[in-house]
Length: 302
Image (cartoon, rainbow, N blue to C red; front, side, top):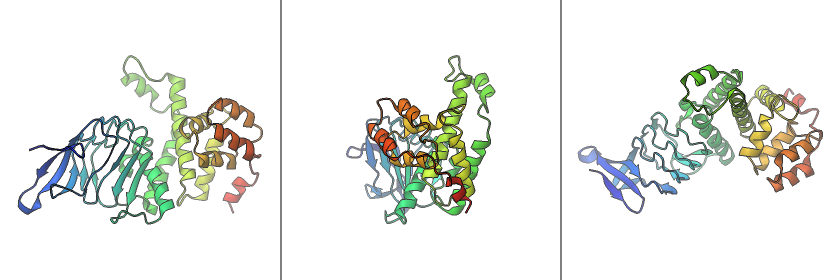
């Protein structure tokens, strides 16, 4: 029988038999803004988040799940338009397909130790960003490995997926997109190219900013891709991503200065692109902009 917890704004069922009964979250109020799901409800351990339990909770921004969660069903948090942060406890969790489908604002999937702490705050913050990118940008749900996220093996898999994405042609899949698309397509051909260039630029920037175990040769390759997508190139995708998605995140501007994507020769053009936006970052660029270090790429090879 489905029951409702007014304080939490969720629906749940008690399943199992005898001494092995447990709680399953089955649905939620669509107006939820954030929620900390408790370890137990009515004395029963919460072990599962059911299929579509939080589907289309448009205002949901943050959710924290407790230790003891064994599975999260298909589309459990799909189409949560404002979902930014998810907190999970490290362990083996079976995830259904499309758990975070179309959650375009998802920026962090934080994995804590069983006691709720972070083993290495800086590294874990970086892993949280990379983990969130797996379903949102990379379409790589196999990287949603809560038990092993952050390990060297997991990072190698992440980097291998990024290498594959960068190796794809910018128009890869367009003919299928047209053949299978509805009458009002979201992209024409040029827009499709730019969409993929922005996706690649976003991933390059993300990995360079969040760089645990990133090899020097990979740093060089990602930096070169971004330098090929700035002012004066076929595409300015890297700068559009910087301004549209990382408007006031200083570490991204520092990155673009360090690798030479923004430099003395194109600073004025970049400032014009910014227009009236991001006043603090405009001041930061004008204060810190220097010609790209000539030894940047050489340093990576030392």
